[in-house]
Image (cartoon, rainbow, N blue to C red):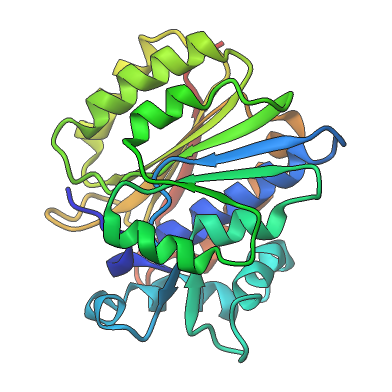
Length: 276
């Protein structure tokens, strides 16, 4: 599956991913110690929702625009980071994870971004101008292992690939296993698109067999049943999420489910633990 982000910026998957990412970082920041935030597949950093690629799919109408129309206060932090890159009331630009993470930084925190595609890396450097982020242009999986453990006591690695390569999940699985051996207490977030339940059930079992403790899975299915050949939702694997994050997760997930449910479909957000 090819999931180039410029075509899907601001869709329902972005809303869920970024709401949970904000909540996760905020929970870790309850402690004053420095954090290192690492984004292995950073993309362009900022996306024009009126641009040709975003307009081709129109997915923002079912994502960020729904979140902005929903009155639930649990979505306020998400709306604030989107509004920060927009002058008007309605979002014209959508911040990718790099711009969102940059907004969350405290003076003692660090942000490391990586994007292998040369054109996207060039755009990323422009989007991050004026921030303290370090931008790399390397193989994501090599960088993932090279940057951990970070110099700070705690950190988060976000793995958010476009799934262009057939072996993407295999590379994630192998690198994830190595990363957890190298940095057992680190927090890692792996995003993935959902096409059908059976295929993702198989990947879930592969990850379960790694025996990684404290591995949380969150999946947002837009439809009650699979819609063949189309994007059905997205999921996140999160290892070592802090208690403050998991404690606040149920009401946030219900707010997201209600805000993003397509007309005529209930949809669901499921969570389970794969490890002990």
